[in-house]
Length: 375
Image 1 (cartoon, rainbow, N blue to C red):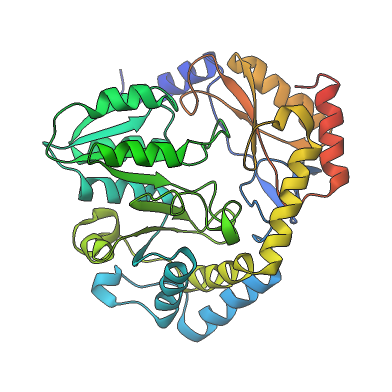
Image 2: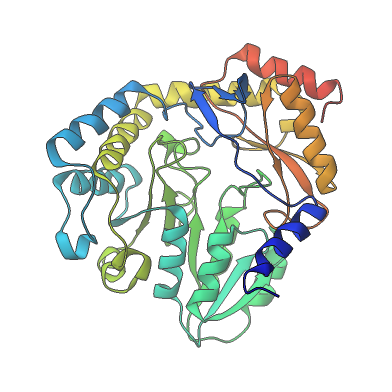
């Protein structure tokens, strides 16, 4: 057997189980549509929740910053420093969220896998929701702390896990879960964790910008000790941040490996994020959030009880989910199938994501298609 034969074998195995993923090429896009394989499709797959990703104001800010300061950061920020735009972005996030420190990361994945090994080590206990994002799971593993997984949203099970003796205890949860669209009972969870002396980390990626007062998300208001947020969803740019108490940002400078050993975010990305945060903090952000809520209501019973922009349609078998996605694509909708390992076995699904950029007519068309049994 040749040394690389395992590659073909692994691909064949994935294909046989309807798990082989391929990236489709998007040749054009607007705020709510994409062109794929020559067809214009309504995009219900993106996380651009407020429709800022293609906003000309963000693009203009990015272009101006790159003309003035160049595109690339050149090196790790610890080596080559950062610009006044970085200072402005971290400062605006601190002010908006009302926290003492903020540190930028290149992605939500980098933020979570960088943060958790800094705040938990061997001898510590991390208690993690079973549906947490892969970046949180991997961050737990990298910390080398003892990890206990509690049943999804089950505070009784969480409390049982917290009774385990440990030097330091950390509870980790998403606020709005990326594949299920449901929300953690954060106020109760934080209170419970604090009674057991545990630190609370909330990944607020799918709430920042669209939920809470002025779009601040859910974590800070609930009293979480540390909040991870993203700039690549509602903010319309890219990157992520960790927000928390005084000293945390400086500690991350010194110990977060995904920060220390990575070239910084591009200048344009940071400038676009500054503009996006400014928009969503104000009256325009409030208007866009209301449009998003109206769209969720228009979708009807399938979105009932869900607090954010994510509406999952759990189908079951991988092949059935792929077929449902294809049927919807034939009707003009872009909603790719989500399969294991992204979701648990037997729960392949379509993950609808709503945006303020959608029109009421587009949401009505989707609702009608779903009512006709296309998914």
